[in-house]
Image 1 (cartoon, helix red, strand yellow):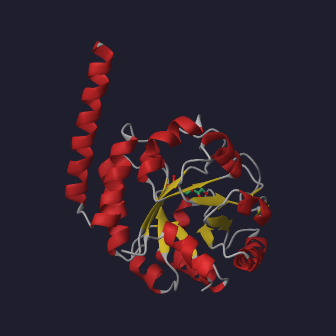
Image 2: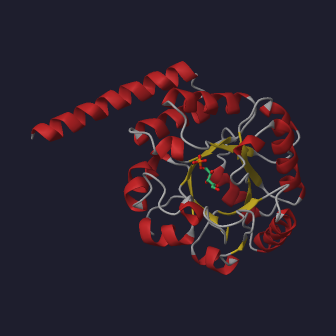
Amino acid sequence: MDWGLKNRLARIIKPHDKRGVMLAVDHGYFLGPTERLEEPRKTISPLLSYADSLMLTRGVLRTSVDATYPVPVVLRVSGGASIIGKDLSNEKITTSVKDAIKLNVSALAMSIFVGAPHEHESLVNLGNLVNEGEEYGIPVLAVTAVGKELEKRDARYLGLACRIAAEFGAHLVKTYYCESFEKVVRACPVPVIIAGGPKLATELDALKLTFDAIQSGAAGVDMGRNIWQSDYPVAMIKAVKAIVHQNMTVKEAHEMFNTLKDARKQVIRSNQKS
Ligand code: 5RP
């Protein structure tokens, strides 16, 4: 692997434990002003120092993250469809590699839509993006998107999508956690990280999801809504990070979350008094 590519990848998946915590805030590219991400800077700023890397679009990067802040950026470069449009799989590469270089990114990210109407285009896009990224030493994260069909999230489908992404040259794959997730990881020769998906009922559920994924071989998370839609997002990212990098159990991470949550509540209460 080229030195530059290896160096960029090491900013995302930390070499000491081969794991990483990526904070996903790219949702607006097809969902618009997602709940609790309406004002990206307000959502992102308190969480930035706890994320190993940040996944977002160039628009939010330029407007909502200070250029002087040294967080490794994973730039979403695919898009072209919206949640109210006909077909979420109808994406193209929307941001040039030249722009990504100007933004000093650590990786490029795009979605593939295996089994969807635009499967072919998305896979060819991936192959071409890997070709171009590798010319400049920039790794590519492939996102195995399911569009509105969340029920697709099983080991057979996700295993197929992850393996295809790796075969096309993706350096890192993001997918969903599912039952028998170890089969998905085993059949994918590059690191696999998990999205959190829509907000789960409780923080405990999201911590359990993180723990189960790590136990099954995931290299970390690329998590959004289950962090910043929590009432206590900083406590949540710290607890997720403790599972990923410190091998905390669900119980330990949940205790940590509750302690941080109580401390935060107290700060809010004393601010209200003064
Ligand atoms: C959207 C994405 C998101 O980044 C991904 O789904 C992770 O966020 P969340 O944990 O909220 O699911 O790629 O296509």
